[in-house]
Length: 220
Image (cartoon, rainbow, N blue to C red):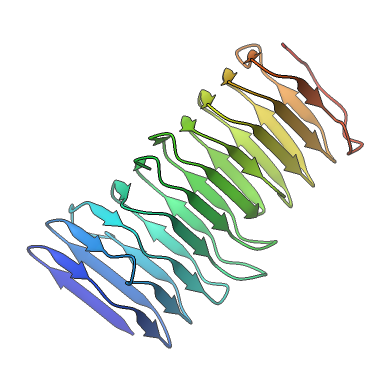
């Protein structure tokens, strides 16, 4: 195991390879450089107990194990988080400021994805995940390629580029969507659009173009 605790700051400027878990916790700022990718055969946790924030440009890869961020995160560059093909949850318990950098997530077919508010107009791309829950999203492009079980949007979505949501399960849109181009929503299960889920788009809006799921209620 790798366990780093600091009453001050932590700077990770080179790659980490761990055969088990990685825990990083600081009272001050933790900074991960683009070269500071973490590859672990166990769970990776940042900020579990201390209150320090995280600025990261490094990728994290696990072998079907959880990736957890307890404190607020700022992206210093494009970041890829991959828990493996089968499982491993990705959890952001606090906010994410993308600073116009791309965030790519893959939790496999059985790993869940939970995000606090994501702002900053970077691309958000989700390759796979089971139960996916999102708060406020202020992004450039929003692409969810697959969700094994469900996708739930609990906060308003603002996308300056295309929004493309595909789910092998259900989709629940519980807040308003504003998109500068196209919106595509497609599910194998039920798509439910709440009364607050009005969609305002500067491009075409398509629901159910390819998959067979029904639509519960739509405000477009």
